[in-house]
Length: 321
Image 1 (cartoon, rainbow, N blue to C red):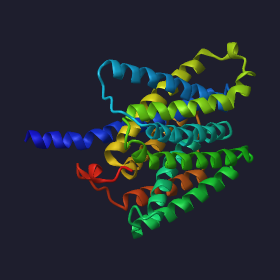
Image 2 (cartoon, one colour):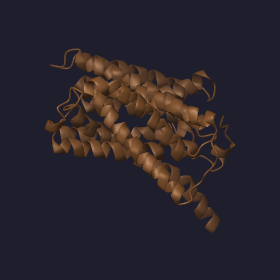
Image 3 (tube, one colour):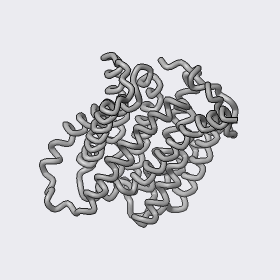
Image 4 (cartoon, helix red, strand yellow):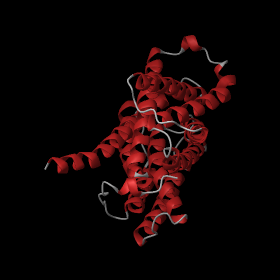
């Protein structure tokens, strides 16, 4: 009986970690929009991930002092983690915050977390790492139709001009970067602990963001930035960045990129709710229809029309490099 309970807890824990990650990410869209309304998008990305990198460095230091795992990592392991940061931190946030400066956060909360697992699944099918079932192909096709409807709604949104459409396309690019980041997770974690990998990835991306945003940062009137903006900066740096990214990497390590991607469908619900409640944002009818079709297609593509429990030893049997 005890073994059964332990086994059940072992299967559940990674999904609890991933669910916490999705709640933090979902709330981060509206919070980031508040900051972008007062600061250049590149500066916001640097503040968020620079703060996240500092928090992770402190956590890594404390872990070592408390006698945490000290598996020796090779320069190749560090390079893989840093490379993941270039894609999942620098490129992702460059596109994401740029998009956020042009389009409402409610758009990003629907496009990024829904398209990321769709693109992840599409890559796994194209490379034949997963089976191309009828349900998955139909789901990808449905998702593509939903995306087209959504972008058509963005282009025709009243008073938005072309800015909202461009912003949504930038969100799509950021989703592609996140899909690549997710797919690299297994390989990155082959020879390095999740905390180290997350720290190195976040740090490398933050350094590049700092270099890129330096010219814009010199033009900011820092003394005029409201206190509530700084509170949002602290929140997104610690919660949706440092804590969430660490939990996400742990989740990928435990259940694999495909199953981790399924949890992304929690984000649009949380993100849409936060954007509506705190920012008063909303979709028009065309965008709402597109978002619904996109979500249905994404769920169908990733789950193959059913949710199957993973056997506890599945992740251990999968290749890690």
